Length: 387
Image 1 (cartoon, rainbow, N blue to C red):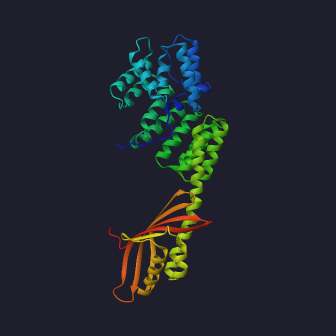
Image 2: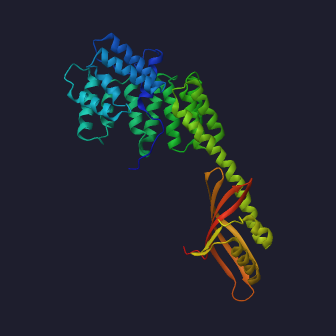
Image 3: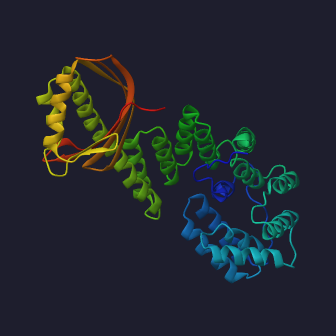
């Protein structure tokens, strides 16, 4: 079964969203067993922070809840989502060893902990179905099932159906639109993904995460400039969103890469056109006249620009005509002043002597920008191309 990644499908974001506001009497999270009113209050605050994707704050509140009640089962459950591996494992151990009173939902969660302790790869889908059956109007287990089902292409539609069930209980749940957006992204259904994220912004416009999520959508459709704007907005709204700041930087670089790629590809097109025009004087000007220059043809190295120029003019004398046409092209931009373009091309030529040539080849060029101009510094050509 093929596995996929649904970005930011951190289940607690979704399952705890309803703690922010009461909604038509529906349960938004499973009951938590504790005699400590302080622990339960902190549990609710932690849940709200998780919804807002404020993970450090959420786990700080969870820690305080466990100080108020060291045996707080749902506090240990929350910690199994912590980024600290040692804390996750310790919390799992405490859940497994727990011997106190638990409600019916917590008992199933404990069973899951036991099974995962025995097998870390255990998939708890059926167990969470049990919890969902125990609490048919509770969104908590439905949301966790969404997370479980979103890990596989085969069950994405079922996850969407569960989200629709959540909307039937409360049509204003922000997490539903967020989760739907990422599932649609996984399905490459970009139209519905955009609609979902727009609705997410509409129902939670005062939170940072909807803008971060919209940024992820824009990155997926390669609208890097607007993605950068969204990530910046998320970080500006909440400085705890360090990940948005990092993604903002990445999106800005991707946007710059698009501009650079266009510049270099325009130069490459001009190089090919000039070569086809057989103006060798103009053609050789695309290459860097420098000791760094190197041209490799079928493994044979021409390590000087002057040698390359001589061979270029000799080629013109050998052929009465030629034409190069690009079939495929791939551009990579590893740095602001470096680009590589790899091409698959057809080459048709009529030699002064001998049979006509009609074959394929590959041409890889490394371009560097010096003094504001892009020039080729290295070339690797393979001709004819053996496929």
